[in-house]
Image (cartoon, rainbow, N blue to C red; front, side):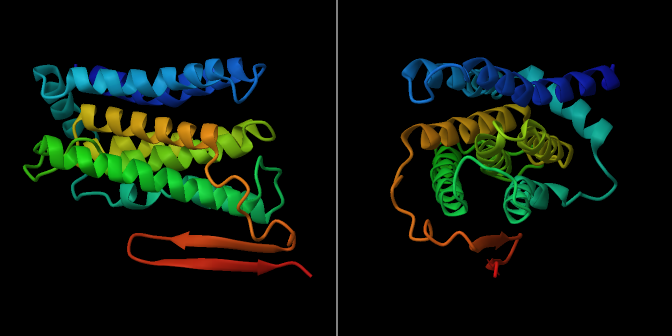
Length: 246
């Protein structure tokens, strides 16, 4: 019984980016700024949020997490989820440095990445304080998952930047985001509803950012094609990578 439930969990989480990618592909032929296109893009994240709300605090959720934790947990807590959520960022800027064709200039990528993470992070924090849900391990502020929100925000930025020029590169971020969500549950830090809502928030906020394109015309580096300034992020440190091509 346990292996079956574990497989169902993985399929549910993987379907979040597979279905999402299919929705975007079907909408590509439409005007990217049309409200119809955005409504189609919003289907999957809103579905994830709705499903998470329905499962929140349910007996099914508790049973599901028990099986997942028993099947996938390690003898000692894994720290992979603390770093895996940043993998889409590393992939995006690595692709930029290697010359892959992206939708936007690297500064605009950074701008939208920052805004997406800022909005989704404070949305998640607000909900954590409001709901005060207890984590599976007994600690506080479980709902929704901040790690998962961050991971799917980053993955959605990567997708929006490269889905036209390199689909495989674009999709790769969702694999890391899904893995982050799975690790959050296997580490007994979050419930299924936490990661579903976190994923939905991350995707939805990022799509809103790319729809409205805030500060669209602000780019002081647009004339300097040979300069790349990339933020470096890990669990405790922040910095920048500077590249100048002669």
